[in-house]
Structures are given as structure tokens and as C-alpha cells.
Image (cartoon, rainbow, N blue to C red):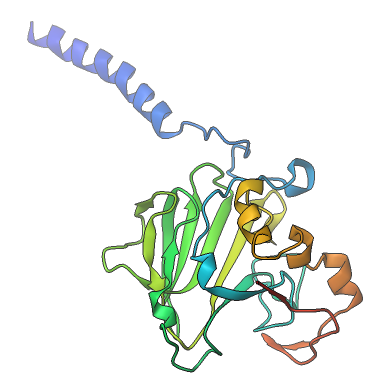
Amino acid sequence: MEGFADVRHWIALAIIVPLALAGCHKKSTSNSNGNGEWDIETQGIPKFVQTDYTDLGAIDRISCFRSAYGHDYTHDDHLEHCRSMKHYFWPKGGDPGWSHNPSWTTIPIRSPIAGTVTRLMPEFTGIQIWIGSDAYPAFEFRIFHVGISPTLLEGDKVSEGQVLGHHGGDEAMSDIAVRVATPNGWRLVSYFDVMTDELFQTYVSRGVVSRSQLIITKAERDADSLTCSGEQFITTGNLENWVPLN
């Protein structure tokens, strides 16, 4: 009987283990390929962000995607260089580096998606948070200068709209970037590219005419090219860098 019990044990393992492994490797219900990549050239950019990452009522203006403000931010894009491929959100109440009333540290920062915190990286003010999307695993969001909740750790699951902390300080504006793993390498896309029409209406209500107003196209930037030394802009071109909110 003991030998028979051993046989039944191994038969059970032969059935259970493959089923368990199959569960571990269950594919995402999104349309990314088996490698967790998304081909933005053939599939376009999905509009899936329904919740804003910050309090829009506290924001005075927003920098354009591919602007000449701040510094060159293209190291996650294999096709472009010398342009800022993220958005700065400039809060109300004055310039960076001064004290504000109320302080910019009162502005809440939320997760725009359900996902996983893949990295927490200290900056000169606050922490940079990387969040990988559950629904679209090829998409990763980076939120800069966050005074994070002390309980937030790398590897944590976060829900859409979950408060991650507050803006990190009066020394810097808030900024957000979105990168995509494509079959040909990383690409950067605008935060407004992935935003639903319903959420974008909150920006329309603040005077934004269209998404294109917030996005300098690659062709436009190439035609009005910038010069960089390292990450520093040496020339700033002729295109408008900012969209004011009313």
C-alpha cells in the first residue's frame, strides 16, 4: 500500500504542477504580444487612462511633449534625441524654488492606473515612481518628485486613483512620462496620448483646445531642431513650450 500511495503522490504532482505553471504564465488580456510588447506603429496608442495623476485644479500650465523646457529627456526613446519627451505640470502660486502658499507639497499624487511599482528612485527633491500597467503591460508610467507614502515599496500593487503621496517640494514642478516597450525598443509617448476622451474633457474645461495643442509632433520638432550638450539645452527653438490653463 505504501508503494501505491507513492505512485498516487507522483501522479497528483504530474497533474497539479503543469496546471500551476500554466496559471503563472497566463497571458495578459490586453493586446500586447507574448513578450509584453506593444507595436504603436501598427496598433496605435490605446486610450486607457481614466484617472488623473494629480489635482488639475492646482496646476497653472503644462509643458508640451517634445518641448525645449527643462532638459533633454529622450534616453528611453531609440528614435529621438534632444527634446523633452515628458510633460511638466507647473502648479499655481509662483516659480519653482520659492515658498508657496499653499505649499506645492499639499498637491496629491495618485496612480493613474492599476499596476505595480517597479522602481522607486531618489531625486534631488522627492522620489521618482515607476508604475507598470496591469491592463497594458508594455506601458510604464514615471512620476517625478513625489513625497511618497512611507508604506509604498517597490513591488507593491497599486490601484487606479490610489494616493501615492504628495508633490515632493517647492523646488521643482511635477512631471510625468510614459514609455512603451515596442518590438523595436523603448518609445516615449505623451501622457495625453493614453488618456481617455472623458478624462481629457477636464483639460478642455480648463481651456485646452485639443490634444495636439499639448504635443509637438516629431516632424515639427525635427524642423525646429534643438541643440544639446549632454542633457542641457543649448538652443531652445521657436516653438511654444507651454499651454496655460484658465
